[in-house]
Length: 602
Image (cartoon, rainbow, N blue to C red; front, side, top):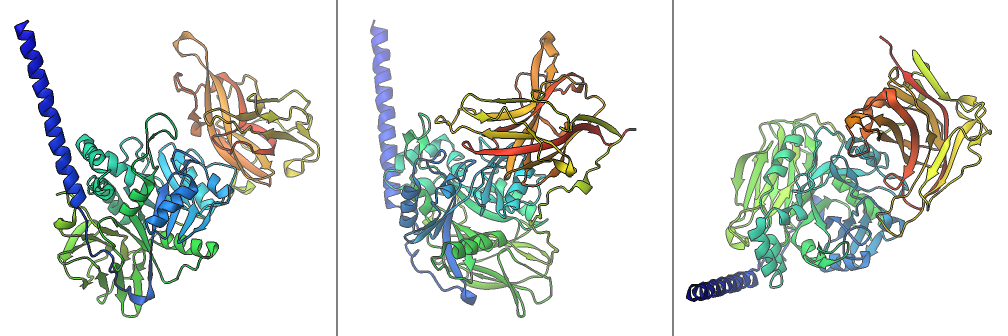
């Protein structure tokens, strides 16, 4: 009994000692946080050369339309308090704020609406895109081309996020990538830093968030690598949700706040044009500046960066960030910064440090071609921790390189591009003599499909007299996780060993993205299971000839062997669902001359 009593006393003293240490640590960190002010001279911007304006903004933010905690109005109040000129809202896989007419000016700040589409390789940001009922393709290149088709900008989001990193660097035509992502920065700090953040946040939110910042080595290294091949615009994504989710959507601890995140990190665009308060005019200025890379990233929580300017000149020819110039003996870089005494500018060429300087304004003669960019560092006394990270990160100026731009002309495939009569050909249906009941229509219980009138005798593709008509209406479920879908297809066993693709004509009453699904038997493990393969495609309000190669289909079902067996096909369907089309959508799609083909026979 005496020994047990001694152990209890020891445990009590150990616990008391731990609590005492925790209390001292908390008081110390709180005192440090309370005393931290950043750079006190942050409200003294200096004029920019050549009549440029510097506008600050927030990119990548979530609202109650997806997994954020704030309404659009709440978020825009925070943007105004953060003194940002614009915010680009990017809810997951939706532009409902745009459909609801939320885009526009809110006091001093402009709200623009984009989207964060999910792909098989990670997340993108689609900026400057109009509303549409169809969703972006699941494959990354497909999604980028969708964004480009709508005239938008495509950025890779949080490329090295610990839970959802980007996994396909073979993509083409994207405009840029997030060099900094708020959610990634806060998560990558480790448990110790997370504990410090939680303890100090109530005392000084800026200190709490800035203390978690570290130099984004992997992002910067990848950015420098890509920028040596073509322009890649670097941006900062706040990825603000206004909540730490703990108990499901909309429930949790509402920190860090939108306002705190917005004040800590911003994007700054440089433009010779002034924002006027006109939505369309100002939207074009902001998106054009981002498209051209006329922007830089700043931790505004450390101090106001306005006055920073990075340009290049050859006699009368001038360029700023994102632009290019030929390499001549007279090419010169110009750098201006507005930091306190001791602020250091680092100049990089193709990711390698070539010089550093502590002057407010200096010039650097260029003797070699490359992608030149700048990082600006405040003196250590203005940083919240011993970790050194840049106050400002510029976009590159490209000297002496023939650059490939990210612009992409998207054209629908024309009939002449697809061989209409291959060497091996299996006509499924040309709908000239089709009878009711030969094709199957299905839907979930809440959605609607027209089971009558499947044959449209008013005409089809290539002057034919009939086509298959698919009329549908997707339900609008209250539960966001509920599946809604409508489908049309045939349930017929076929041996497709001798064929390598399906070919068909298709048109619709407006643009949709739909899923082609091929179903076959999985005979592995001695038990028959249905295995589904698919690929999405878009339809347009005119007849188009489409081909989908069987080798391009991806697996849709789990728990199967993942090996396509074309000799055991069970059927195929064309499906409209919520993954590809907005719930509540209704419309009509027509098909004609559906066939399986093999283009070349050895």
